[in-house]
Image (cartoon, rainbow, N blue to C red):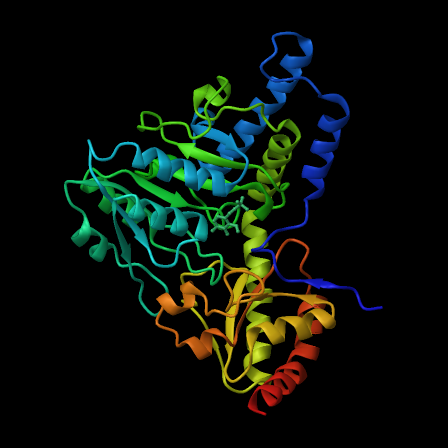
Length: 384
Ligand SMILES: Cc1ncc(COP(=O)(O)O)c(C=O)c1O
């Protein structure tokens, strides 16, 4: 049987061996509650603090700024809910972007229903937000600007340092969902006027169910989960010690091979695209090809149905994601592609390939062997 091919790393990644090893040790030996004062608690506390330092190093930030959460979804919800608590006294306006992840987008829609003003800024056909358009919509009542660093569907990278500077120049706190950027691009958070940033361990070889919220020292912030004094009262609840330790180990490993991996995956991704473009007519890349993560390719196959392509590739043992559906089983065109002005029928024919540490040349060769025939068949079925 053919070796299966996994090209859906933006959905989740396999656990890195370093993370598995670190977690195994903790699961077997470090069972204490980090809040307990005795030896068992101290060992767990040390493990959490060592992981915090590892995560902080990859963020380019101080360890005290890292608050561990259950997910990036929780981190995003925390920032938006905390911001909403400041309304109406300190303001009533939030600025976001049309291509955000649902964990920001849906919250913004909830806050709008609850009476806040929410401005959803558009992007250009490359998927990029113009910082000047941001400047034009800020006012004295703006409480927060939230814009993701790198897009999960297209890999498009926003000019975050510039966007953060615009928000700061207007005295507005800035949050970025940096889930897809962590371990892929240098973040150097301490160098930018960024108040909050959200992260998720399972997107870079860590375990699922653990994330982090970066809170710049001195930022106004209220905890979403209240109770115990954990995480310096910024997130109550007993820490997920093995998960946090796995997150730390994954960050350390990702930091070590970031440059080499980016170059290698960029080469493989370009080989994939060049092979597709040479063998399959009527194809195009969705989103910027320059301001883009090195391992992501979102491609439109005109006249084909993306969901059907994903299913046919799956039958051939190749895992990719539909660029058309925000949720599996959905037949709606993605809000990200629509936001970039891509027509619905083109969006529906799009799929996302996202490469990762385990991706090899042979995997790309395999995709290029089977994809042309699959696209032709799927296009034929759709035309009937
Ligand atoms: C950009 C982005 N933000 C947030 C999330 C949510 O992360 P988590 O799975 O940790 O809740 C994801 C993952 O799908 C994502 O890609």
